[in-house]
Image (cartoon, rainbow, N blue to C red):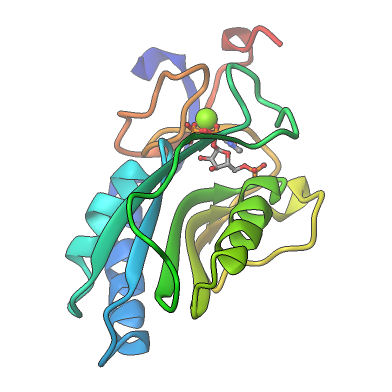
Length: 179
Ligand SMILES: O=P(O)(O)OC[C@H]1O[C@H](OP(=O)(O)OP(=O)(O)O)[C@H](O)[C@@H]1O
Ligand SMILES: [Mg+2]
């Protein structure tokens, strides 16, 4: 697996330090409230696990699985709900936890959905942002790292379901991609 990586973009230490900072910021932001933290599966599962440990206010958590990339490095443009939330978002302070915002399609779809379900407030924390990929106008409330225009893997992010378990973020060797 390590042999498939051409370049490490962000190390494990850099990720962990940034997540601690985000946790501190979010703990201040949500002081006195109990947000419902929503993990967007699968990509955000590792970030979610590390982030909630760095948040010191009480939180409730729920998980939603959506997918639009499949085994490609390009968004299909169609966001599919694989698993919906278990609890109601009505009147809740929602914090959506994403691993990456690329085209912005996944998040714009989710935000619209949660607005229609009458969430009180909706904020987004994303570990990575790739502004060059955007096809819809959208920005996260909190961002960890801004990435260059490259398809990245690791720390939850996959290519064809692999490489999610790398503890850092990197770029694959070109020969690994079949499209
Ligand atoms: O801004 P966008 O262009 O919509 O891309 C971002 C989304 O794409 C990835 O999910 P994917 O559809 O690959 O599902 P996964 O999390 O199960 O890998 C990633 O985890 C984000 O949720
Ligand atoms: Mg994916």
